[in-house]
Image (cartoon, each protein chain N blue to C red):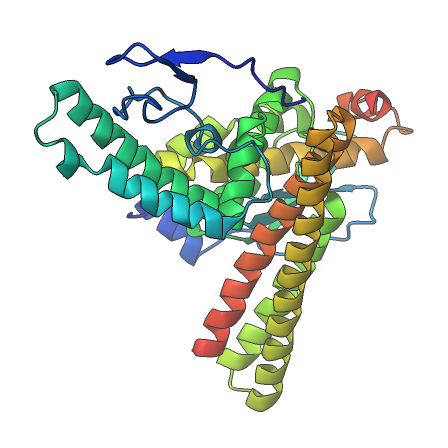
Length: 142
Length: 241
C-alpha cells in the first residue's frame, strides 16, 4: 500500500514533536491507544485561560506512518483554535487532508480521540477556574 | 451474556427421512451427506462452546472429516451433494485453523458472545463522538502509560545503537527488554489459561456473572498482548540491524 505524498511529508517532517509539562494547569494531555494495531499517541495542548485559545501543541506517536501524520496534522490544526473550535475537528477531515486509505482510517480516529482527551484533561484541571466542562459531567457520570 | 444451550432440533435426512441430531453431517441411518447449514465452528465440529479444547482429538476429527467431505467422493453424486461437500470442506478448513490456535480460538469465542476485539476501539470512538464526550479508552490508562514509556526507552536504545555509541551495552539492554517482553507474553498465556478454565467452568454452571468477568479480563489481556507483541517486533528489528 502506498502512502500519499502528504502522509510522507508529515512522516519525514513531523510538526510539533515533543513534550510539555503535564503537571501544568495550562496543559492538557491526551494519551490514547489502539490495541488492534498497537499504536500509542500522546497529544498535548497549552491553553490560554483568558481566551481559551490553544497556543501550542505537541505530540509523540509510536505507530505507523499514517498515525504519525495524523497526529502531526492534528497539532497543526488545533494551534490557534479555541478549545471549542478544536472539538469540531473530525477524523474525516484528517482522512480527507491526508488521503488515507480505508485500512488507515483508525489512525485518524486515534488523532481525533487524542484531541478530545487532551481537551478533556485540560477542562478537568480547570473546573475550579470557571470551566464547567462536559468533562466534568463525564467524570461525575462515572 | 450467558450462553444458553439451544433446544435440540432434529434434522430429517433428505434421502431416507430418518431423524438425526441437528448438527449431524451425515445421516446416521443411510450415511448420506446432509445439507450445509451455516453454523459456528464449535457447532460444526459438534463441540460445546468452550475455550479449553482437546486439540489432539480435534485434529483427528479434522482429518477424518476432511476425508469424508472430500469433493472427489462426490464426483458422481447430485449437484447439491457436490455443493455441500465443497461448502463443508471449506468451512472445515476455516474452523480447524481457527479452533486449533489458542489465541484465534479465544478471539473467535469472544466474538460469538458479542465481543468484537477489532471493533471495540472504533465503537467507543463512535459513541464518544455522538455524545460529545471524551472517549473512554478501551485500554486501561496505566497500560497506555507503561507502553508509552517502554516505547520511549526502546527508541532511545535504537537511537543509541544507530549512533554506534556503546554498542555492546545498548545491545545488552535491548536483549534484556526482549527477555522481559518474552516473560510477559508467557505469563499472559498462563493467565489466559486460568481465565479459560474459569469461564468454561462457569458456563457449565450457568454462572453468567463469572463468565462476564472472565471475558472482560480476557479482553484486557489480549489488548495488552497486542501491545507487547508490537514492542517485541520493534526490539527484534532493532537487534537485527
